Image (cartoon, rainbow, N blue to C red; front, side, top):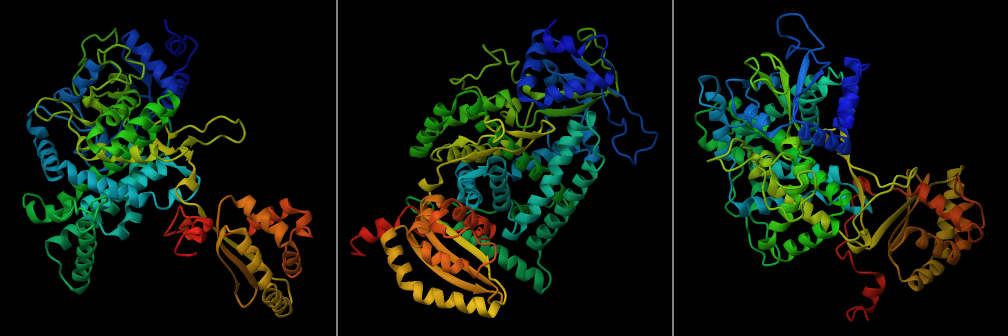
Length: 622
């Protein structure tokens, strides 16, 4: 017997120990892959004891019962059966999230009366949310551009956060939210996706009774806002609503008239967002029904985009595919019609680690798989579909390895052709183009690399909460290839009595100005510099905009204008050792300690790659 399974089946293992082992393996990408390889090599339905209540919701009748047996499905045939055989499997595990027709993970149903409503809703959403490829690509480009403004102002950034922000901006544009709704979307969708991952998977291994109620509450908050917007789009009643609609129309016009480089074409000039489109055409549904369809769809889009981007880049690093992926990204940037190679690499990475790795189903009939390797699955039990195992069980050579020349699009990831495949998903039309755009732009960042753990020196890996939703992936890049200028805002507390020391500082600045001016001109790396007194002359602030490395910049002034800083620091609390020319490192540390980053780390430069030396040498300045 293979290693992990023999450990799992050890006779001295309790049900609790098996539960802990399985959870640890499924939460770790490498261990999960090993487990899938073993289960597919020796086909088996893996039964384990869950820690979850048998009741879908606490309010359901009957007594709570724990320690139910749950079954992990890894074979593709079993998973496809669970996705299609609605007489034997149901979506009831989603009930706790607020609806038995929750759209995330729901697939093509057999035509039975019980599923007609769900089928109609899904078909309606697939039709209402469909846009041409050019529109989705344009919205994706704008979403990334907006999302990248703040995260990429510094050398280190969190890819999970950047991709989440791109998804939030994209959803805002696509559905017709106000720009001010981004904060609401962020707050509610984080709780919603956390609740989804708990309900779909983690509840069988950990206890977090607040996760699902918080998710339901968050989705309820967003549902209220979506319903409000639909009502406003249908008929604005009252002055405030009319003003809100006017503001929404102004934001839409800004989107429609955006001129995309390099030709300045208005690719979105005829774009109409989903919410006003629904308000105008969806007479068969009430506003509340429409809001429920929209909210369920949004949660899936944002979570899947964040996960897909993070996983793809992580896989490129981990599996040594970064040079190949970066070359494909460059070709796609130079010629958008050549983007297929990059998309294939992304899908291959996601085949090995799908963004939604687990889907739940409840069994309606006894033993739906027959006698599966001696394991009988009774009616009423839960099964977990291990999507990442099914995508490895594809009948192709080397299923557990990254296949760089693979071109097959596994429909279990983002859905297939609606005419002939069991799995349908909005991601194929909406999420995947945004994923490709964000991955492409990140791959093009100069000097892209993983950050290192300061304790171990090992690269920081993608972090996943419960092995499901991506929470953090710290990366770094050569930021001065995008923006050379940096800001310095040193806030220094003036000694008491304030009147005496503040006046002395003002005099020092006045008579020291000529020397400062000379040294700044000679340095040729400072764009702007000035002092400011704040809070009734209780604080002195030094503002500068400079080129290059922080330490080198500060040390230069420690050596060049040290005597002036010696005079200034005589009137400043918590001053570094003096004279600063003899203690340049301590001076740097003191300046760094008192330096305040711009609010929200937002810093704009009209000429991000122009140094002072470039500007001074330009013909206009000469």
